[in-house]
Length: 531
Image (tube, rainbow, N blue to C red):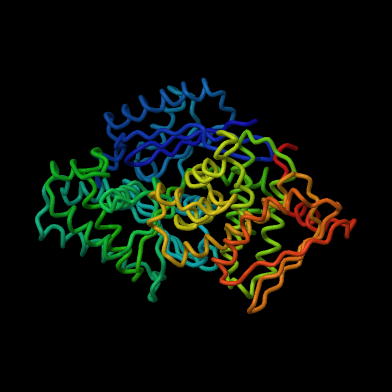
C-alpha cells in the first residue's frame, strides 16, 4: 500500500488530496480538503508581490496539511504552485519559507506544464475525442485544443477570477456598463489566440468557477444526482445563469443556493470568462470536469509505475470499473466474470434483433462486473444495494445518464421491478428510449444470472437466434441435470416476450460438451480481485 499527497497551491485556494494505491495497482481517494486563501489578493500587475497577509494564510493552511500527511503516513508528496507564485517576483522566496516552516517541497510549474497536467486529469476521466479545454483559476486561465484525444495547442493567459475582479473592481454590485467592459476585454484576449477553433467545438471546463456555476444550475433544476464531474450545462441555461448572477448585489449572490459564499465576490468576473469562452467556441453545452491539475499530477506519477500499457485509453469505463472493484472488500468467486461473459454472449448473438450500439454493450459489461457489489452491504436485497453503489461510485468514462442506466441494470439482475423504479428519483433524467434499453440489457444479465444460479459454471455454450416468430436460445451444459438453472430462468420468459414482442424458446442440451467456451470468455475479461 502506498499513500501519495497532492497539493495544488492556486491563486485563490489550496487543494489537498491523499490517494491510496493498493492491490492490483488500484487507487482511491482517502482524503480531500480545500481552503480559500486568496494568495493572489492584493498582487497588482505593477508590483507583482505576494502580500505578507496572503503568505501567512497559505503557510497556516500548509502547516495543517503537513500534520495530516504525517498522521496519514504519506510517503510521497506531489506539490505544485501555479499562477500567483509563478507571476510573483517574491514567489521563489515564499516557497523557501514553505519548505522551512512545513517541510513541504513545492515546485513552481509553468503555464505550459499547468495546461498539460490539467489536460491529463481530464483525458483520464472524460471519454471525449475532440474538444476545447479551459482551466480557470484565480490568476490565470489555461486553454487547450484537443484533437483525437491529443493536445495540439495550449496557452496560459495571466487572467483569472481574482485578478479580473481586482482589475475591474467587480466584487460588489456591478453596473451594466462594467459588465460590457469586462466582456469586451475578455473577447479581445480570446481573439488573440490564433488557433482558437472557428467551427463549433465541445467545451470542457475545469476550476472552482465552473463547478459553482454547475452546482447552482443543479440546485435550481432539482437535479437528482449528486455529481458534478461530466455534467453537461446547456449553453442557454449557462448564459441565463450568468446574466442572473451579474444582476445581483454581493449580498444577494451570497444567498444563491449552490454558490460558495467565499466565491460570491469573484463569481461575476469568473462567470463572464466562462461565458465568453463557451460563446466563442459555439458549443451547445459546457461539460464540467471535477478532475484537472491534481488528478493530472497523480496520473503523471501513477501511469509509468502501475499502468504502462494505458488501460484507460483502451476502455476507460471498464478500466475504471475494475479499479473501483479492486478497492472494495468483495468476496470473489468466478461467478461475476462468468455471468458477465454469458450476458455479453447473448448481447452479441442477438445484436441484429435488439440493435443496441457498442456503447450499450460496454454498459452491460460494466453492469455485469458491478451487479453483486451490493452483497458487501447485505445479501438480502443486494440487487438494490448494487444499484445504489453503482449510482454513487467514483467511476470514470460514462455520462450521468449511462451511470444511472447501469445502476438500473444492476437493480434488475433478478428481474424487472416497477416498485424500485417508483422509489428511485434518478430515473427522471432518463428518456423512454433509454428505459427501454435498460430493460433489454437487464434481461440479458438476469438470464445469465439465473443460468449460473448454483455458481457451478456448468453452462458451456449458448446459441442465440431470432426470427419474426420467436427468440431461440439453445443452452449446452456439462451436467446431465439442469433443474436449478431451468427453474431460475423460468420467471423471465414472460418478461422476454413483453420486452422483445416475441416468445423466448429455450432448448437444453445436457452433458453435451466438455469444453466450457463461456468460462474461457470469462477468463479473457481479466477480472481477479482476490489474487
